[in-house]
Structures are given as structure tokens and as C-alpha cells.
Length: 350
Image (cartoon, rainbow, N blue to C red; front, side, top):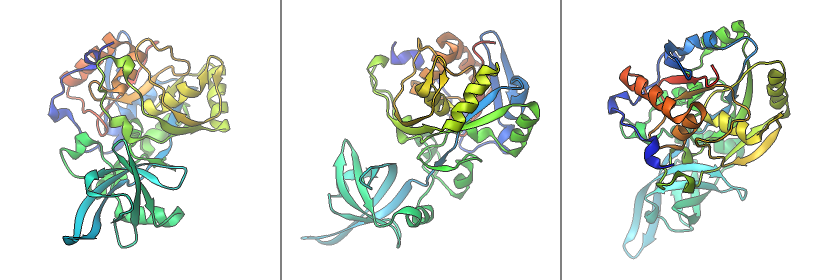
């Protein structure tokens, strides 16, 4: 497979920079091998069956974008430089891996102050990232980060507008619980209280898993031969309780419907032919056409970037030719794309 197999032309006007309001008023393209139906997210229960189970990612996005100053004294006197940081992942030694811009403006051992309460020391650099040790930990760190940080919007939104206070609410699911993501599980952004209530009335159940979405989800694939791409790893967990719920639904004949590629990847990491087990760790599963799915019967997912690993996963699930038809229809009918855009429900067995 070549990277060009997953490319398409997208008009910039279809890149959503704000979500639909209310959330469940976003559009939903329901796609099977033989039909395409234009609907809205609030209609999702109509395309599921009583006894089906949604699997949802309850990760919580942290305000990982920071702006601070590096101070230095030298032969030229006191100098300072503006440093932009995006936190990526906490490390076992207590540091945070982070992207710094510009990285060349800091040296190991230097201090970067992000607010009167929050500062960090650069403890090392590796592969274009830095390792920061903050002066605070636990709840004190969380509080200082909430005050100093901003939501880390995807590059394709930030190129069109800056993050603002509204994104603190918009770029978070209504059930976000476990802090650690630096990107939202965006298929879940279509859910609000009205949609949750409608699902309950329809007899559709929910289970929660956790996959902390990393900034690697936005990294471009740079190899023309897709097989040579190394997938980024993300930390996740499926609890015993969620595994039991999912397996019970399968045993009763219900369908398992992950909401988003993050929930899908976690299920497929922990799944076996006889069901899913409790699991905790890091997954770098890379799903491309030809992959045999073990757990998912349907998938709710947003419309993804061309040539992205997420586009490859969607192609694997519904078929490369069919997913092209789905995306052609979405573009022709002005669906909104990417993180704040509309969604699709892929039903490969219908």
C-alpha cells in the first residue's frame, strides 16, 4: 500500500473550526456497503439496535499548551526568550516530555517560567522533544496547569484561529474523567445529554475505556510505503468491569460499537476471538486494510485527514473503495471535517 492510496482533496472551507451547537445537531453520515444515509448525531439511536453497546473513551484532555519565558544571564547581560510548550506525556521519573518552540532557545538545566506559580527546569532533550521537571505535583500541578495552560487544538485548527476560553468546554467530552490526553477523542464530542437520554430509551448501553490520546495522532505519515510507518504509542486501560460488560453484550447477540478510533484501537489491542480482557499498558497498534477485526461490529468516527493513520483505519474497516465513496459524498454534501466536524457511522455488515 502506498500513502497516495489514502489521499484526497479537501476544500479548506470544510475544515470545522467550531463544533455544532447543540453537540448532537452535528451531521451523521450512516454508511453501509450498499447505502449512504444523511442524518444527524441525535438520530444515532435509530441506526442501532436495543442491546447494542457503545464503547466510549473517558480520557480527559489537559490544558497542555503553555507559553512562558526563559531567562538567561551571560556575556550579553540578562536575556529572555518566549518559549511555547506542548506537554506530551508524563514520564516514570516525574518529568514531562514536551515539544518546545523554539527548542534551540533553551539549554539543559535552564528554567522556563509559565506563570507566577508554575515553572519548569529543562532536564534533557531527545528526538526533537524536551523533558521538563515542574516545581509542583499532584493537585497543585493540576490547578496551576488549569490556570496557565490552554487547550491543545489540532494544528489544522490553530492555523485558522487561536485557542480561546470556549475551547475549554468544546474540546472535552461530557464524560471526561481520567486526565492525560493532549487531544480529544473527537467522535465523542457529538454526545450531549439529549443524545445520551435517547440512547437509554432505545435500550443501547455504554461502557467506558481509557486511551490517553497523544500528539502523535497528528503526526504525518512520512513513508511512501505504509508498511514502513512506525505508529506512536498511547497509554490506555480497560477495566475488569468494562470487559465483563462488553463480553456479556456479545454473548447476548448485541453489537459492539466503539465511538472513535481511540476506543477501536484499544478494543482491538486487548481483544481476542473469544472476547476482550481487562488490559492496561501502551498500545501502538497500526490498523490498515487487510486487518481482521476481532471486536468491533460498527464504528462511529469523524472524517479524518488525508494520508493519516486514522484514514487507513477507516479504510480497513469499511473497505478502501467504499470509504472513498463515503468521503466523496461527504465532500459533495458539505459535511464538516476533522476534530470539530461532523461524524459517520460505519456499518460494514449491514
